Every structure is written in structure tokens, then in C-alpha cells.
Image (tube, rainbow, N blue to C red; front, side, top):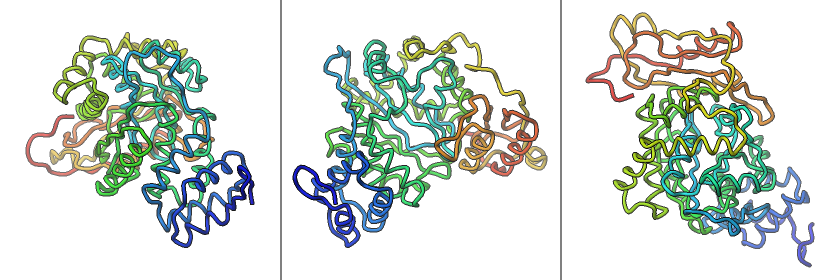
Length: 443
């Protein structure tokens, strides 16, 4: 039993309500989350809470209440003391392979008049994390305190940093338990976890990039649609206008997968070099959605023109450089100087099967999750939150759908020869070649 505001609250009774198919009142949800935050609710009770939600589900009203309670478990950024030049706009992805979208989209939006306070996450399992990518830049303060983060946002228009212990701390504790109790996939808990952190950033608008496919957590479009609907409904119910875009993740999104390598590709795109047409199209699609949503563009055609102008004029690249400098980074890549740090010592090509080359086959499919796991095995990702990251390792020059089997379809960047050879074998097993009709699609 826990005492709250002069009244007793029973965590066990709270859990029993949902276990038996009942509905959680908003006040009870707030009391439970308070207990999660101050430690009076145990890990065992959090596990029972998550399992009860998993089997009995959480309705819209409960999801909104849970999201707001988790937001209020810590600090909510206050922007009233800052002279901001536009609406506060952010984007969140549900995760993928080669998903470097945030690194480009944040500066693009800032160059178009938005203010982008982006609280990003680290990678886990087969998906990469924006914070890990930025951490490959020497000096970049991904763990900057809130005051410094807000100062850079106000002066540059964009800053990207990791979640602090003060932002939605209840979410961190609940997620750690969900991760080891087979309850991560519960839709209502996913929704509250994502949105509580975004609400804590003090946003005006949010665009959600919900991935689906063999490289995404939501493997089918229908599952992604259900999550997207939940995020949109709960975000709006909690006072944060939320738009959702569904994007496929059946192939790596970029030409690279791995932290420093993805940063190099992102900066090359900001400089005007398009390595992956599909990557650029996803960034522009999300960018258009956000600009229209935030009232900065009347329609998607105008929004696309604004993005094109910010890109071709160099204003987006300038915002990137100022952000990196403001966050302590000593490398911005705008001069085309290559990777942000020392390269991996071993670099080997991965060739398609001889039969595919001789037959003139093209790339017809990729086990994208397996590709992400190759990066993890190289040391560029983590299977546990406490694992360190090697920023230099990963994959580059990845072939994409429809491209012919001719020459290397990837390069492996590794610490040693044996690890590189094993990674190359895994990649060969992950890529499928076959006959294809018509010209290959744009890369």
C-alpha cells in the first residue's frame, strides 16, 4: 500500500483491475506512475502492470492518461523564456536500418523556419539510433544539459541530443522491465513510451515516421497503421498535434549502415550529393508533412519548394554546421573531409554470387533485419543498453532494389579480418538476386 495525497493507493489493486478486464481511472494511473518514479512500485509490479496491459489492452482514454502521467514524471521543457522564430516541430521514427533521416531533416526544417528541439534515442537490437550516430562526431555533446540544449535550439533553430534522466523518467524504468518480460509489443505502452518523451520536449507539432517491413519492428503495413492510428489519436488527445507517415523498411534506407558512415552520408546529402534517391524522397515526404502541419506551407507543393530551396541554397547545410558547433562538435563534414573520426582498419568488398552476375540478375530482396544484425555483430550496435558502440564499423555502398549483380554490392568496415569475413558471409545470405523485368528503379 502507498499513501498519496491523504489516500491509500494499492498497486496490487490497480493491477488487478486491468487483469480482470476493468478500466484504469486517470487518477489511479497517475498514482501508479508516481510510484514508478519514486521507487515505491517494484519491478515485479511494473512487470505485472505490463503483462495485464498486454493481455487486456489499454483503451484510448487510458493511453492518453498514461502518456501524460509519464510526461509529468519528470521535467517538461519550458520555452517561454526564449525568443523562438517559428513553431516547435519534431519527427520520430519507429526504427530501421540506414535510417539517418533525422540528421538531414532537422537542419532542413530549421532552414525553412521551424524550430526543431529533437530529443533522440540510442540504437537497440538491429536498429540504429540517432544519438549513436552523432556521438561519432568528436566533441559533440549528445548528453548536453537541458539549458545548453535549449540555448542551441534558440540560436540555431535545431539541436539534437539524447534523452536526459530528467525527461520522462518513468518511461525509462517501465521500458527496462518491458524489455525483459516480453511486453514491448503492447500497442498502448508503445504509444505512451514514444509520446511521453516528445510531450516532455514541449513541442507544438510532431510527425511520426512509422516503419513497416522485414527491417522494422512492425513487419506489416496493417500493424504499422494500427500503431500510427494510436499515436495520432493519443498525441492529439494529449494536446500534441501528431501526423503519421507510413514508410517501408524492406531494404536499408541509406547506402550505409553504421554510425560514422551514416553521418558521412547525411552530410554528403546536405551538401547536395544524393547517394540514395529513396532516402531523399522519404526525408522530403516527412519534411512536407511537417511544414504543412506547422502552418509554414499552405500545401505539399509549396512545402517541397521550400525544402528544395533550403537544400540547394546551402541554408540547411549551414544549419547543420552551426548545430554541430553549438553542441561542441569539432567536425561538420561540410568540406567533404570524409568520416568524422578514424576509419575502421579493415575494409573488404562483398560480391554477389557468380550465378547472379553471369545471369544478369538484379537485387530482388533483402533480409533487412539481418543486415542490421550484421552491424551489431561488427560492434556498431548493441543488444543490451549498456554495451559500448564502435563508431567506425559498419557497411557502405549498399546496393538497393533492382540494381544489377555487377561488382561489390556492399563494403564491410571492421576491426579485424575475421569479423569482416563473417559479416560478408552474413550479407551474402541476406541478399537475394533474381531475374527482374523492366529498368531498375531509382536508387
